[in-house]
Image 1: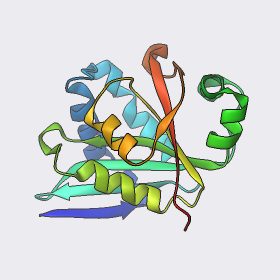
Image 2 (image 1 turned 180 degrees about the vertical axis):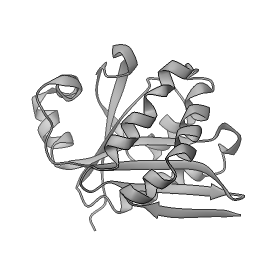
Image 3 (image 1 turned 45 degrees about the vertical axis):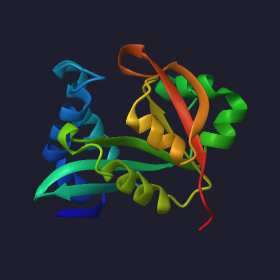
Image 4 (image 1 turned 60 degrees about the horizontal axis):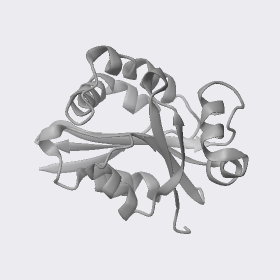
Length: 182
């Protein structure tokens, strides 16, 4: 039986190890094939991000275990330096103001490989975006033709730019979507 649940930061922290396991399974599988080292930083990133203002997470439970998750938060400001500076460069100054500043960042979405193709990703992302409270949403993803990219397209995401935004400055694509009012 499948159940979807919305978690705030402290509730997410309580299931952190389960989310890390889902992330490692999802990103360690083809076509991503990230190494244990490459996926290892996710636990630290998650611990930091659950404290962001407006953080929200949706988790899918299937047969009593975490099968997938999606989380994000609003980005009232986009700093000029660091990773965010590279993000600004990827979309350009006008794109940064329109698509990133004051909008909702979909930070991570992951589904266990053996649970893919069952609609978990769509259900999680739709719920996450439904409560975003902004005009637009954005995300950074691999430049691969995956089912996730097809999902993003089906929800109106389009390319805003690309740049060295991944692990060890690997190229990634920035996508954005207008969100329905209300």
